[in-house]
Image 1 (cartoon, one colour):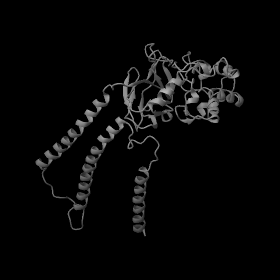
Image 2: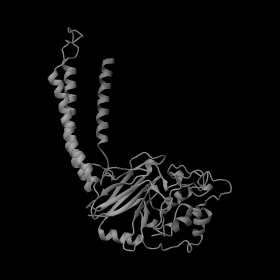
Image 3: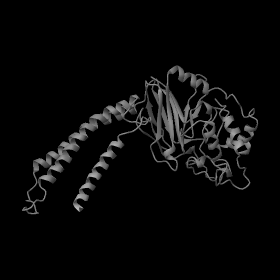
Image 4: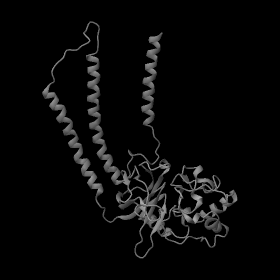
Length: 381
């Protein structure tokens, strides 16, 4: 009975292992599939990975097959001594198994290093975008040209198809309230990654790194911070929206327009935003040219997502966020309401809650007030 149960247990273990492998291979098309490249750089990386993968599989089969062969061929058997015959090492074999891996690695290294230099080259005729990694969201700045003002937005990076996009990746920005040697505020290390368009590129304080994106296929591609950066690292998403050059130019032009509803004409919403809850300490809704501590909200309604691309932009979800953001995404913002970012003794990483842990004497937001603010923000197209 014991042997039968033991054999049955081994079969269940094998089935569980096979099921794990099968389920691991099943993944929905979620825009983060490195094996479904849609960008020039992603295709080049994919073309490099496949031959290396084939070599790795062959080497793995030889090693695993040899191990199994030796384990079975020289296993203990009745009538045999437990101690196998001792032989001296074979110098020829030892030299071969040293040289062959070295040659394989050298062959792999040549195209790998070549691709690294190729992707690091400055692209020609590129659309330039500055990307600032903050905790825990991404800011995108399109520089002004031909007398046009710059455009600052968040969460969604728009790019034209068929063009090189030169991303300047930074973790330091004057809008951040803390920094090194009294310089522009610096954040922690992040990593910018859009699996279907390109490889990863670290975003390092005090350093500007570059990444090139290019795709001929219009669509929405999901990105993610790929370097642990604190409490809400896993929620630090973004979207790359690739569109035709005509649609891209139209979007960029609309972002340069003054918001249709100004704070001065917003009535109660303007008072709530600037005075009652001091949202204007971290955000702006009046100019799409400003880099602010929190995301620029001047054209919030033109986006499909918010909160670092984590939530779809709907009125009900926006109201929940306005009232108690840390209740939806973890943040280190319990003391944010004691003063504006950068005030002495204030730790403000993330949006504060206006309903929970409210300091004494500070107003608690009602559902009606959240609705007024959400209605106002959704009018900013």
